[in-house]
Image (cartoon, rainbow, N blue to C red; front, side, top):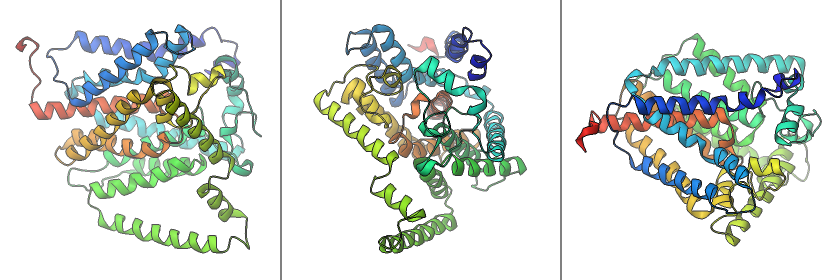
Length: 422
């Protein structure tokens, strides 16, 4: 879309922006029309419906200072992924070719890695060549900044460039890497917990390593290793878990030694580590300031300030309160009830995934493992960014989540009830 904007096609861009929503709505309607049986709902389904209805009430009622149109835009940003979830939830799992679609994600991951290598060779981000800064300013009111003419998220402390490959930001790039790693591990793991990976899979893993390194995002980097650790626990790979324990212990000892030398050395790795731990670097300070502001707002207004008062939409309006945390963004806008529902849904997905991942076989197990790894890996990034604002990450996350619950409900009942049974 930024390229289209550069080519002078700005009038076409709104249609391009809305195309994905139109596609999802069309698929949802098609799934409803072609339903042969009435699906039994899971507890998670009821919780998600309650969350959506609650959000919808905040959009319809005159709550907050935002206009009705602004509240609708915020509603889409905060809860359209629920439409994605139920689109997948109403699909016939027997017609879903999981391996094929997982391979599409793997091929995309390799493509992302190839673009990243090109960026590293040139020494500049792809977004510098696509008119991304002008596009973001025109449509979202995000002014360019930083040393690379994009915005501050494209550089780390000291001005080191961060790369986003084909994504809109290094944060989205890093989060997409977590999705890719979860899918790779799930696809190439057999029911007997053996790994049968081919050259394409190895190339994809290499691409994820490059991506997680050069996106330079600390929360996703920690989550990257968390995925590997949780995967080792699920598949009972004691060598991997023991190795991680030993490496973590050695790293802890090494950092203790570095901290003991802090008075003599304030540069390099030590400075980065200290600034990260004591939240003194600009990025960490920004997180803390936004967290505190958001928490204070929730204390003063436990039912929320209204949709559009925090997060990406509020940022584009220049009226943001709190942020830098998905949970706080929800709490500031729609209060502690909505926050409780969102947290409950998230915890239920993890508990349900842990319960079923070793009970099912074949593609059903692959779906559950991918969702479980993905949900756990997003826990840390959710605390430092608005993950749901990324269409690719959010849509894939909730689409796979919908398939997971479909798999579980069909396994529990063997066959969903005929619609005329009620």
